[in-house]
Length: 213
Image (cartoon, rainbow, N blue to C red):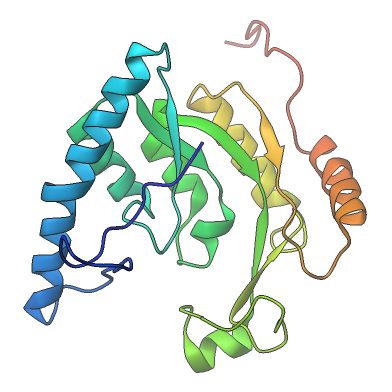
């Protein structure tokens, strides 16, 4: 499990340059250079190295600030490099981008290698004023457009039940790893609440035969 990384704007750059719009044209040129000259060659080399050492799955977390941050950028890299590239699927980073994690799960399907159980609460008042791109410190909760929450404190049972059901439909049968980054709860309380919540939504048994069909 790792991130895709994000190059700068040139071979001499010292800092990453996350491109989020196509204009001015400089941005499009930077983005094309990042993918064609750095990202794809780098990950082709890394995948080859991993395969030599028996590693067949590299799970990239789709995370803003990196070149792979949503469904299409994950699939773009996977198509360019190979099926060894997949997703560490963390819905918390998709919520605040305005994405529907369930739609993303359906699109990614077998490209999902690992899943994080973490929630996000989008503040409707701050978002209405400032949008979702927010560089304020995570500890400034009252002023931020969104904050990470323990599962159930950003989205309700209905969402999470649909989420785990969709994971099953696309063939995912692996862990949901609780990731605690809720600044309003202690680690212990956040973890305990997440465990209790997930027990109500996870599917534990095999489906068995459809006697009604």
